[in-house]
Image (cartoon, helix red, strand yellow):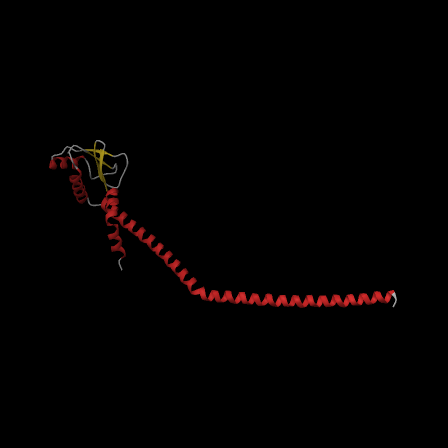
Length: 193
């Protein structure tokens, strides 16, 4: 055999060997691809099964969160309505007819006066609590209260001052103090079903 024939035979054998290696590699790649596809389908099926198993729990949790959000919104609205009710009570108190307004303030004053020589601070906007009214009160109760206009306006009522001690009978403050005591009852009346 000549050198050229040997070379051709070696090339043919190498080509056959390369085709065989390539075919084995292709078969191995196909096997890996099939195994990967099977694993993907297995994982996909497990995720679908897991989702279907957990779906009711997920929906239940979302419903619970939604219900909590609704309750928060309802509570906020209820708190706004309660605040509105107390604000309306303050407006009603401040806009009482003069005779009822004066009677209410006189009752407050009777409870607040200790020595009879204090002075009343009233809002600069105050129309009912004036010198004439205070003069009648002093004569009736044998006191010597005096009247001053406060520097800051308030909704109604007065501040009774003796030295450094103030007794706050301003309507805003009375409503605030009352609110702490009766807010639960107001809520019950407004929102009982």
